[in-house]
Length: 586
Image 1 (tube, rainbow, N blue to C red):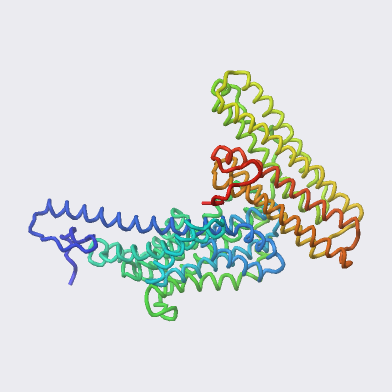
Image 2: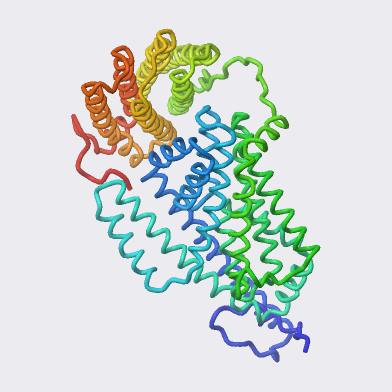
């Protein structure tokens, strides 16, 4: 019998509410139906918001606690495509986001640290990893939720070690993911009692293309294909979505997930965009092909599982697994094809824009902000120099050397401009806070200029000497320098974040890592001397370059670590010679 359409009050009844009598009149019934619909939408939106935030909470904890290790794994994965795919899968499972892995890979590719084929293999593995994460999170939990919350809260509040605190953050995020899914299940339960909702779901079942588009748009809006898939699978498990429509939405979420990284890297260098575009062609194109198969050859897909939710979740996993297996042997060819479609462009030389606005000098706080923005450009250029000089140790290139020299000269010019700008500012009557800010900024630019000199002069000289004398490091020595280089580069990027946000927690992390870098440098020096004593070093000249490179990288890290000192002085977290014993990071 066809459901009555004259009872909108029951269409979206709140959880636990009793049916409303229909004799109250059409006006009252309409009002109650509207209120019930609003309540229903609030329940759904709140559950989805908690899910999105929880996934982000886990990703933030992993990035703060294990970012260096992730960088090391991704860089070392270049040895083979299978290893690259496995590394991408593990990284995505840790970060609970293939997009986060794509951004890391694009950064490596932009700096020349990864080839296009390896980068694409990592992204294929990351897509599979995110599908595995969705499967794991769909398992209903009972006792695990309070256990995760208890352990996570204790670690986060009581531990003084940064990594343990961030582990607590990860556990809390996982627990909240399970809570949000339970909320979503409860919120979607009344849908089956809604004639209006049933009409919409029936339409989606007959229009899989619209369902596909909705899935892609939803994944893009929430910026997480994992969260989108969890929502769709949970909805179909509750009977709130037809299985066929949910399958189309999950396929759309795969396209939307690939689009996220593509949009975020539109301003990135071409090597990074080529890798992300290759993944978009594979993942998005594959999703369209499977959708076409669903439309042209309707089937129940019973082989994917007994329940509707299981079939939808398994389709997502099977799609990414098959795509990874089939495409992995052809990553080189596909990336070469995309590279021809998106060739490198040679941008015209442009006059360097400056943030130093003379009109802002009459407003000291604004003028100081202009100087900070200009100083940030110094840091960005030094980051580019540090990345480029690493390739010179592998293979000398005069173009790369010229690029590093141009960046070094630009850093010197910016430092001069900032000093002159601050001198103009100091001619006015300023309060103590502005005076201190100007002094701190002047010291910061001096440290950054010193870092630029270390990279642009000393490290280039060492790389040039290796080239002219045909020297090389041992395999173990090269690995030690590469790992140490990744740690320093991660701290440089953290320092740039501190410059922008002035976050005390990140400033503490930056300064604390300075001591850690010094300790690691000493350990690597002793390790190198041990190899030298055992005759495992090719030549004394190569040994000297190895030790000097480690020392220079440590000094570069020190220059950037100084960024956090003024912030910690303001918060009272810095003693005369070391950090206080309070918690390192929140």
